[in-house]
Length: 516
Image 1 (cartoon, rainbow, N blue to C red):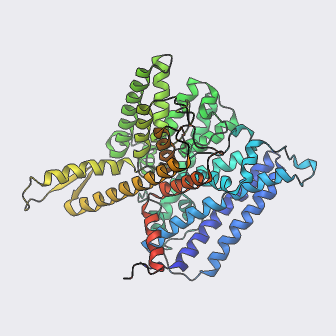
Image 2 (cartoon, one colour; image 1 turned 180 degrees about the vertical axis):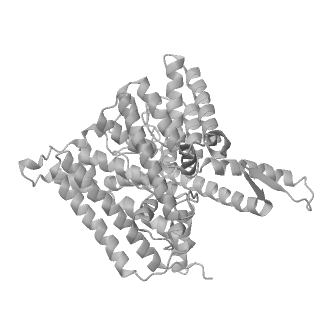
Image 3 (tube, rainbow, N blue to C red; image 1 turned 180 degrees about the horizontal axis):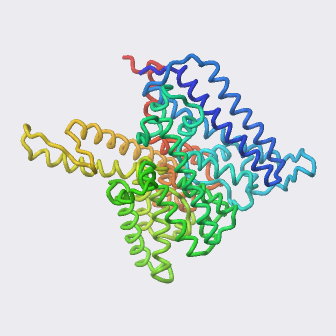
């Protein structure tokens, strides 16, 4: 398995060029909030990222268009590179405040303990990878104490990461016939709104921007301050989960705000082509589309089950409070949004029991609709695995000469088509569980035995499903090896496993390790 590294280098460079524009935009935000001390950090970061990207593009300008193999390697490499380089602003802003080399008019604040965390490169990379992958786990202990320019950068990385850095690049830099669709598919997307993939991507961004503005207006109308509404609107529709408060949405102690956030998380869980049809007035897609129907069914059923578990435990004061917390937390987990209104655990101290915690893990595992902003293994794969397994069992009792089809939604799959999709879903599921087990094993090795096993599973699952909820384990005091493991889990989860396997195969091929 040989990869054309020139093609990969050229395309990763183009993606980094697009990411560098994000840093340029962030300079304006720093200036707008009079955080002039942060301008050099974002300026240097943009130059570094743009410089690396431009060097790669120029070095490999004559590379061939990507095939499927090159696209997979590009996706894995680009997400790794953006996660790594996206940590530079965190590091430089923290060092600028620590050194304070600027005059008084730059408004450099004292170094706060929360911002000081990002003096450590690994913590900066963790925050960046968490942002771009739409995870929302954070090293920031008290998010209120971060500079607003870093609030913005965290939210901006999640907002862009919600639809993908490759989708951003296709929208900005791609030309028809330039291998755009191959790259687009490598980011675990196949949906098309228009025949042209560039037009499809542009339509996705229009829908996404409209949903974001609507979310911001909704949050502002129910009582969130404007800055909070902007950040939560961006990270909510991206199902990312970064907040400007350490207590996330629970900070407001407002049932109205909590109920208002739920439809935004649901909107982020629905595929963009369905949003497109709904915006055209075809509202029947809420129940005729297989994935959308099961998103709503799963959110409803899961919330009711979790309500029953929590009510049976007698943890909250009333049925309404129990239902509100269960609804919010289950939708947040299953949509991979990662907002929180209640503590699941405090690390070594139990708040929720194993039943409630592991049921939330089930929601994080499934995720919601493919073609949306969520991660997890996706409901369509869950449906394929369940129906395909039943079909395989029934095949034992069917004559070999029988011609059989399986209907999944509005698609009628032949035996060959079903075997292909069933195999793909099975491979993703098995590899997904393998990386999850690896993460849990590392945590069990590195952490004291006082941490409950279900909370360890919860935090690793949250990272790999790109959720962002935690049971009190994830934080700056974690051992270095566990931080590195969660970075790997977040990267693997966002790419849906297959590109990672392709990269590993390509590396082994380069090393000629397949030869006998």
